[in-house]
Length: 312
Image (cartoon, rainbow, N blue to C red; front, side):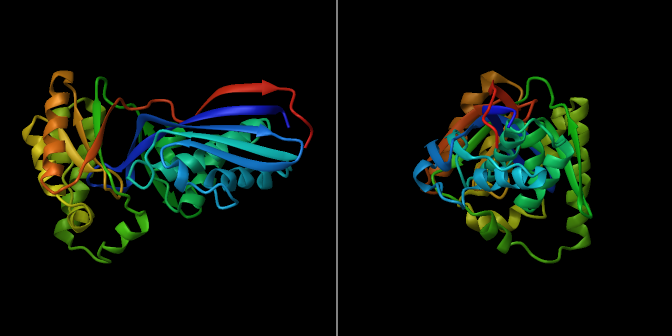
C-alpha cells in the first residue's frame, strides 16, 4: 500500500432533474466522508451521522464492497481495513446516498493503493455496482453531468453549473427505495410523452449551459417518471406548484424521491420558497427537512492522507 490512511469527501446528487430520466444529474454541496485506514489484520466499520443505525456494518456495507472491487481489480490484498463513515446525505431520499457510498469506497481504496485506476475505470466500476450511471457520475466528477451507457462503457460529460444557482432540497421524513419507485413506472410510453420529455431535457441542458434560467420552469417538466411516482410522494404536485408560485425557477422530484428540489438564483427568495414547500407538505401530513445547497463542482475529493502505509 502507498498510503496507510485516506479520507475522501463525496457529494450528494439530484438525478433526473425533471425530464432527464436516468441521464441528467447535478452534484450538490452536501457530503458523506469516508476514512479508510490499513489495519494489521481484520476489518471494522464505524458509522456516524445520517442513517447511522440502519447502515450495515457487515460485509453488505456498500463502501466496503466498493473498496473490494478496487482491491480485486488491481490485485492488492490489505492486511486489514477500518472504515469510518461520516454521513450528511439522508439515505433512501433521492439524494444519491448509495452512489456516494459506492464512489467513496472506490476512490478511497484507489487512493490508498496509489491511484492505479483512472477516473474512467472508477466510473465504469461505480455504474456497474449502482446499476445505472446517472448518480455515480456527479458523485465522482461533480457539476452537472450527462451520463449514458454505451454497451459495457460509460460516457459521462461534465458541464459547469450556472453561477449563483441555489438548490433547495425538501426531504420528507420517510424513505423511498429506488426499486419500489421503479416498479410504478410503465414499460411503454406514448410518442407524445416521449417527445414532450425529450424536448424539455434538451431545453434543460441548453438553459443551464447558457444561463437562460428563465427557461427552467418549462424545461423541468416531465412525463416519463414524475406523474407515475406521485402516488408514492403525497402532495408532490402541490409542493411543485407551491414552490413555483413562490418564485422558484424550476422544481422536480429528486432522483426517485421522495425529496423535491427547487432551483433559484435569488437568495432573498429562498426563505419564501422553503416555507411554501414545507407548508404544502404539511397539508399532506408530512414533515420535511430543507437543505439550502450550492452545486458541487469538484466531485469526490481526497482531503487527507498519510504516507508510508504497511505492506499488503
